[in-house]
Image (cartoon, one colour):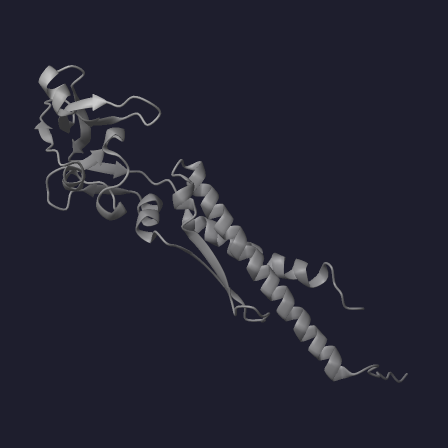
Length: 219
């Protein structure tokens, strides 16, 4: 018995179509895995109660940009890597000066000089008012502001008393602005490495699915 084989069609065109299909499948699979990892990491942050602002620091990109490639790659990164690392590994945070960490209360406001994180010095510069240290033996010490008055209306909060209020003494209160602690222990709340490994394991399946589903080529 004698067997023979004959190629029907343009072999070069067939091979080019296969390469193109592979490029599309790999690029789509990498894109789905990259987007999936970013979404999972953002969800981790919001589920941990760390807020949507930190979640949005996760960004993603696929390469090469704007074209399919059999060597496509994806990158997921955070614009706040230091904060992410703390919640990924856990950490004990101490003052760089060896004294206290100043944790702002709601009365301190959200921002200090130039929109930066509020600090005791920044609060004093912003308000023109001095903070007073209050030592507490069995509790965290405080930095407080004296001669404050509660604001009326929707804005709420406190403001520095006017000269008239200081003369009368009516409605004057002392408000805790910062809580002073020697250190803060942050427990592990994120698992970036495991999420990345899961999506890496899913990548072959995503490539295969994109190769054979919705196939526009005739077979």
